[in-house]
Image (cartoon, rainbow, N blue to C red):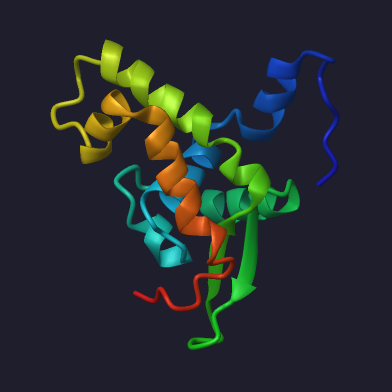
Length: 143
């Protein structure tokens, strides 16, 4: 999965790694929506195709944004969690949500997190990070 950077531009570098919509949506699901299993991602509203999901999960793991561990209860499935590198994209996700909240006229129903982000974006980020600080594998969070 070696990739060559297109340029020395930091924005180009970031887009090379997470520039497709699926990568950020998978990270959103893991970090903000408490989804950690393959079937969880398939059930997201955006209806990602199974081949694209498999590819993006492999890429996100390869690039160090997520970790994959075997579920100790159901050995046939894997648990996906953000790494520190993945969690460090949380400000990007929050900024994207704030931008969309400000400019989107098509979003009919705002998620409850928008109000929290409007009132205290740093506190919101800290609460999300705290969820993952003591649970590296989330083995006790089965669906």
